[in-house]
Length: 412
View 1 (cartoon, helix red, strand yellow):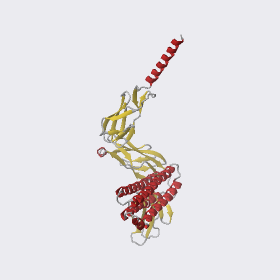
View 2: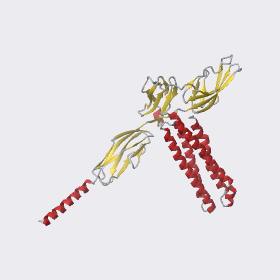
View 3: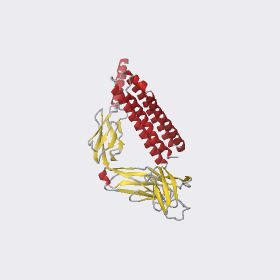
View 4: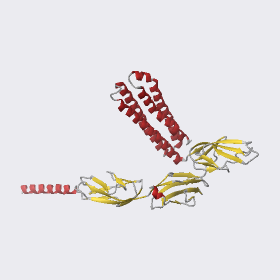
């Protein structure tokens, strides 16, 4: 009797193990969506779920039947390349179960300005890009979600009407998708003069100056802007802020007897300022990478030619600029993220100080190499290598001073 009970227990255990093993086998697969539409140039991601969730082997393989239309990665990431349709298939490694998604790629559209702040009466022209170019021939449609706050013309000219918010949409008429600009219409700042004949305007604004040349007997005035890419001025004296930067606005009486100049600074709005600074910092990061690659290339070309001294020098320079590049990326990234908490002034000052110090350190490194060039050459480092390394360090410093710092100061 005991022996029989023992065999029954063993049989039950084997049955339980078999059932557990069966429960871990793959029984199917599904996708989070069976149909997806993307615009050209856009990306998306499909998520696969292997059934049951407790299956031992969760691996899947991805495939697409029209690689000219779109591509799919090993994680289900999609990249739309051209107009058309495609079928995306996911297959389980265990059992070969499949699921599909019908992908349609339509004209893509993007807006150059994602957010905008205007005052009542201000106008701004928005630009949208449609890809492919052939789809752009059908034109764009524009709309405002709140016509009481702002209206938009068929050419993308937005006019702010009243305080509030509105979403400006651009849609490709050739069956394409939409792009949005989030508009805030706020009360204008009190005054634009920051000092005697010093004028500040926000990017995209337009205004005239009150009594610009009061002492002139002849009030027929002529206007000029020293930098029309930053601001233009009409015959009626209306100044239009075109892009961030500085320009001198000159007003002269028709008889030439009187003349006045106004130093104009055009500032971007908060969102635009962040985009501008981010763009300029990306340029600095790109130059840092180019400089690092250039020094690395010098190291490879010197192997076996100039000896240990040259190799050691290049390796040390590469390590130094590598640390600078890493520090730049981390520090700027943290500061720009802090901006999103609303601390613009603090972030702006931090960015200015950091870039000033970074530029100084890079220039010091470049000058230091040139100062000891004779000693390095005597040690076996080719003069051309020393000069190339010095240039690789001075290039990012110049980009910081010429690109990043002016952009950051425009927020002041």
